[in-house]
Length: 327
Image (cartoon, rainbow, N blue to C red; front, side):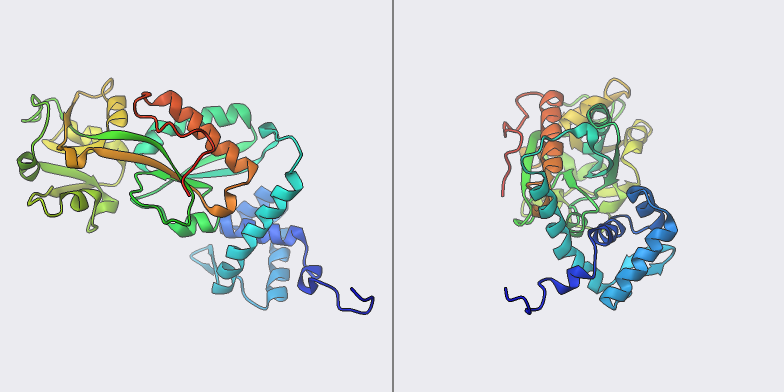
C-alpha cells in the first residue's frame, strides 16, 4: 500500500475492542447494570461507552422500554455480523494455547425445555462449577421450538429440547431418543392398564403447559389423518406442578420416560405406553454456527454429551461422539 493511501478500516480506527465488547454484552444482557458487572466496570463507564457508540454509529442503538434496553434495527443488524467476527478473533487468538476451563468467567446461558431442565440442570451445574467455578450457569425456559434470534444474538449459548426439525443453518446434535409415555395418578380409572389405544386418547382429559394453548402441537401433527385427537382442557404454567396436579385429578399428561421415572420415587404415579405414533421423543441440542468452533462452546457441548451418556440408559443414548454433530 502506498504511503499516501488512506488507512484501512477507518471506522475501526475510531473504535476499540473494549467498545465492541461492551456493545456485545449489552445486546446479551439488555442492561447497563448487568453489563457493568460482567465487564467489571462501573455503570457510569458503561453509559459513557454507550454514548460513544451512539455518536460513532449515529443511531440510538438502544431505546429504553419498561426499564429495559431494546435494540434498534441498526443494532440488531450490526450485532448479527459483529458477534461472529468477535468470535472469530477470539478463536484465532486462542489457537495453539492450552484451554483451561478453570480460568473461564461470565455466564453460560442454556435454553432448556422443561423436561430437559429437570434431567440436566442440577448435575450439569455441579460439573460446570467443579471445572469452571467462576462461571455462572443460567437456565432459560424454551417453550416448544427455540427462538432462532436467541441463538443468533448470543442470548443463549445453546438450546436443548424436543425440537422436531431445527432450521438447517443451525448445527445440532441428537443427545438421545426416548419413548414418550402417558403419566397418570395411581387412582386414575385407567391406571391398571399397561398401554393406551388410539380410541382411549379421545376420551381422556389431558393436561398441557400454558405455552401450548392455541398452538399446533407435536401431537396434532402426529395424529393428523388418523381420525383421532387428544383434547387438552387444562393448562398449567409450570412443569413442576404437573405431578401434583395429576395426583389430585383424573387428568393425564405425557413426557419422556427417562423424565417420568424421576418422578416415581416421589409421587404415586403410573406410566402407560402410548400408541406407537406418539412414542418417539428426540432430545436435540442446537447452537449457532458462529459458536460452532469456539473452544468454550465445544467444551460445553462435550461436557453435556458426556453427562447425557451417564444419565440415560445406553439403549437411548444417540451414540454420537462428543463434538460430532449434524450440520
